[in-house]
Image (cartoon, rainbow, N blue to C red; front, side, top):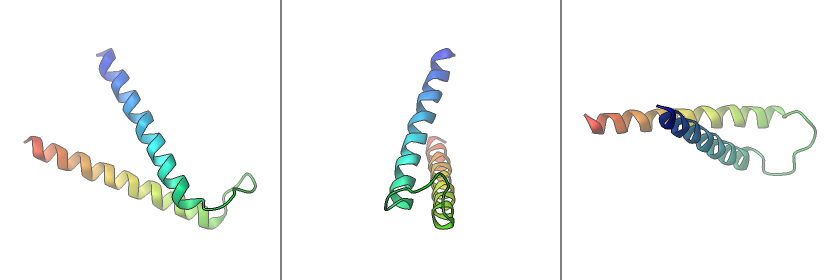
Length: 68
């Protein structure tokens, strides 16, 4: 049981890292200035995260359907 929890934690950390890397590269093309996002960056990040989560959900559903 503990091993399964560790695997889930590792998987979540890996997914978070991938999400951060993909969305950062996509939404921040220049230098970051200031401590707040501008409207374009904020919108880009929100859209990127939503699409990433949608893709992961579709992938899980597809893999589950293949198992049955």
